[in-house]
Image (cartoon, rainbow, N blue to C red; front, side, top):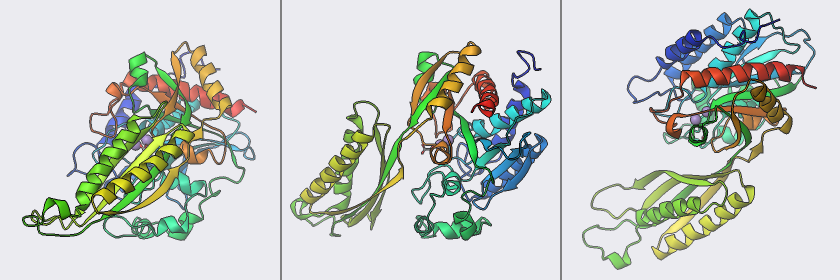
Length: 419
Ligand code: GLV
Ligand code: MN
Ligand code: MN
């Protein structure tokens, strides 16, 4: 039987893994860039595959490009336990988002093996393909496919270079029909529980001095692509009163997005991330603008109402500029609650270890959203310095990661035994 400290993660080993993976990134970008379908991402995943093997896992990639490492349990017929996260990053992102969940799970596997702990069930450690949202307005490609939520229509979406998602898969060596067929491919016996360790990516845990966040729910995300159609005119001669300036209308929309996001009573945020104006000449009134925005909340009622209010406001304001607005909304994911039993298991373990925790909603999205369709899920958060994330300054102290991995390891063991 393992002694009380035997399940403490090995600091140097985890630090080495984090440091090595961080060296694999696009050299020309700032920060850490390993966007989905890129060459650095391909190299990083070769590295993850090798690390999974040396941790003692049987590794394969499924049809959707997820890397799955299996630690066989005693009972091959029992529904499997799943954990994992992602190793892709946003453009110029950080070193910890997603990575902590994958490398932390590998450390958990090593600790179990070193301590002779054999789980009853197979443990699947997954590095999900492409979790970060992309040009296709779609996050969590791999876990979405696993849950059967990736559709043929998604594959027909095009990025800003006009390339279909289906063709991006092909270019990465994946067969689009295998991607669509990946649902249920990972195990014959179904899933028992899913657990994900992740950095908070916000300021709450650090501000409150809590070492662990027990996630209550993950925010729903509505995405907006809006086309503003005005009229090109001479910028030097056309009177201000008769212009149909698409960029002026889009600017008003950007402020409306912000204003709506500031008005949420519980939790809600709204962000415009991109404006593309045409023709983009200094002496021409902008004729067309494409705007990309999103709204998120764990408050389902607010999110729906805010979307309706915002749509109305953007259209009305555009009309005042003589501009037509064509708004296309999509749901990236609905709000998903973490399962009460999994939350309870995490809190019991954390209490037993004498570690401080608090319940916390997630404004960021995660692969857990989609795996929740397959089995009860839960997430463990650890603090982010100054709440910074999706930027090179993203940082989590090694001690905080070690605490997270300890709780994660023991929670996996407890979930394996749970009914
Ligand atoms: C991923 O980090 C997201 O929340 O979009
Ligand atoms: Mn993430
Ligand atoms: Mn992210």
